Image (cartoon, rainbow over all chains, first blue to last red; front, side):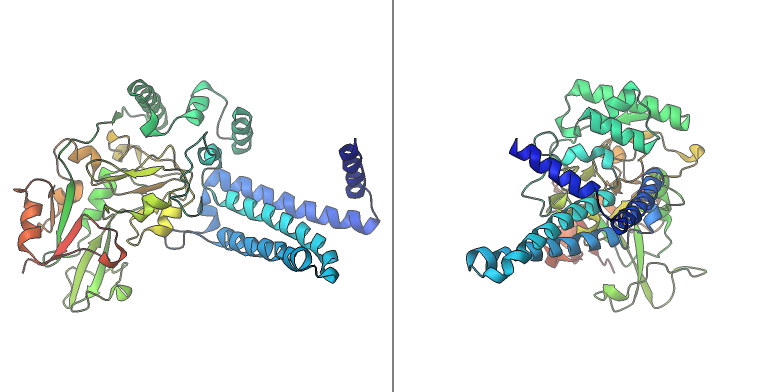
Length: 140
Length: 287
């Protein structure tokens, strides 16, 4: 019951806002839509549309992935002064940090997924169903 | 699992929801298949290739013989840099010809006397005639390492070393992450950045599942010492075509083989030995 109320409250917060908020959301959704059309292009033609080649086989996708992982790690590390050293002034920022970390992680995962040549075979990497080579493969 | 497949299928547009597509989606790792399953997969693939290229393919799954470990020798004092091996390899192994153009062998040109200086090697040399005075040529391809970094990094075990020492890829299991391309110090792996482009008339139809069968887009591929040939007792295509006898090939476990003679009697070296990759590809100077 508590969880349901929290869910309803969050949905209300997400769905209703000022005019500026709607404009901002529309802007972001447009960007997502454009990106999605490009991604579908990439699925259709292959990774050749990224202009990567054998000489440079990892490009912006992986660059963004490593960058966002760093952002997420830094944001999460705010927890240490707040909850281990009990440094109170930082506690308000920690919430923001956690939100940033969550969104950065989601973006990082999406970048890795976009970098995969065969997303249709993604199940090969799921442990027990596929053949995840852990811990032999460092980044697996 | 199936719903995810259907979702991906819808978004890709090119996969229709037929039984073959579902079977293709659920196809197991090659090493986990039973003999019966292998036969089924081969039947499906042969039908698929017939439909796609209009040619009858014979896909072999011949396993490695015992007592065999393939090794390669390359005589640097003989190579003239003509690149005949490159094109023989492309023809034998059904690589994509153009857009993307894939080649498993790269011949690099070095100034004489600076063999150690690989940074200044030229891959795109293009003179009227070879050999050019003052230069030497060094073909580089997959070195079939005993301790291959590409195999270690693969997150889905889509590549492995066969018992006869050949590092192979299951093109139907590769997820196209290109981690192996990044890991290989020899640039031995190439990636199908787009749908391979081979004229139907030039297709080689005697293929091996782990070797030269036609690949699909967004998977990685590499030299397999012509697995389809050497397992039938023939030389790899590059050895056969070489006009100067630069390339040698044989069984490292056979004390009377040519390759063993070369290793014992010539000053051989292996490329980038300091990486501890233990290549089975020996370079040497005969003169």
